Image 1 (cartoon, rainbow, N blue to C red):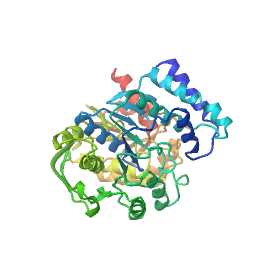
Image 2: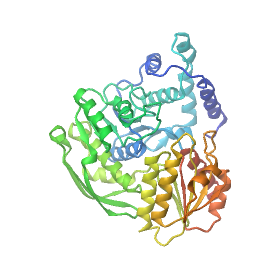
Image 3: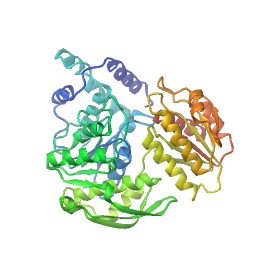
Image 4: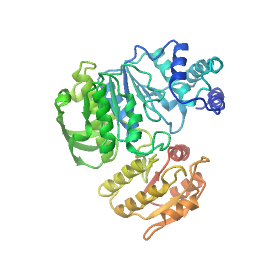
Amino acid sequence: MSNKASEAVIQRIRDMTAKKGPIGLKRMRRLLVLLGHPEEHMSVVHVAGTNGKGSVCQFTASMLRAAGYSVGVFTSPHVMEYNERFEIDRHYISDDDFCRIADCVMSYAEQLYGEGYGYLAEFEILTATALLYFKEQAPDIVILESGIGGRIDMTNVISEPLVTVITEIGFDHVGMLGDTLAEIAVAKAGIIKNGVPIVSESTESEAKEVIIRTAEEKHAEFIDASLAEYRITNYAEPMGFNFAFEGSDNSSGCNIRMDDVRIGLTGEHQVRNAITAILAVESMRARGCVEIDEQQMRQGLMAARNMGRFEILNSDPYVVIDGAHNTQGLQAAVDALVELRGTIFKDKRILTIFGCFADKEHQKMSEILKAGLRAAGCGEVIATEPVSPRALPAEMLKSELEDEGIAVTAIGDDETAFERAMASGYDVILFLGSIYLIGDIRIFFNRKDG
């Protein structure tokens, strides 16, 4: 955000939420009562999961926009500015609207505390701000991405969404959501509602069993996106693929086949995310919730963009950013690198800049990155640090990454790392490892490009 008023509001949010209140939805539900129930009478697609949520949200929104619908999207975290979290038809909330609505939400903080509900959390303020904004602007459909988990996530206040979606589930926020995939899946499956179809792309049997059981308990149609058969026909930009999905008896309305589908996002994982979004939209179409034809779906898939997800900022040299902040996300990113090594990155010199948090599975992430770099035949790395007290020191990261065939330089300051990389003469410069890091990189790049 660019003006002093919005920066002051953000600081107020941070100051207000520095004191932790009780975890749960009671305070959020009371806040929505005080705000006049902005969540009611809203057509919502609710998306949870560990990886791929943002891309599924953007694919879904883009298809619906291509069909003529106005679509609001609430996602997190942001890459550069808070405004990115609140979007209607690719336009972010204005600074003035954000300040006005967030101030309105925070005006109830003292009352909530006085009533014994404790202190508001940052994500409660942001979610309530999004719901009020969407109520005012009245888009046809709203897509809500959960923050952490699902069952007690602040977005889980919609009683009858059009469809719910759970993307791939992995080990993230361990301890907060649970220590096993099954426990984490229980938290994510909390978004499943009575009689509302659930589309899931989870491939881990431990997690899938939880989702299936919850769907059965809620009498919700279970659409297993992981059963879709697909074949990638083009790895270069734009990616192309054929796919077919034949639902079980419980999801017969979602039988669909499409050939030569093109998507504007890169990597095989984005093909799976696109298929998940297609099945969510097809589920809504089959039940008469939306009107959309195949051509509109194709247009939307091609037009979809997701900031900071193997995003190519420049092509001479290639500058790529990916906020892969956990093991699954990093695996998807290095898989995309290996795929592109045979096409647009063929015979090009590649430099990787990597930084991550100390509270993530950084040793496993380092092993994944090393394996990916070997497979792609590129062994030059700069270890750096996101600007955060949670950052893993660059020297420690360097020691984890150094291996036969991999040369690592430690540069703790991310701007210095960026400048060194851009002056390196490499053909491909890939920034990986943290939303915080790539947010800074985008700022540095825009400043340099401008």
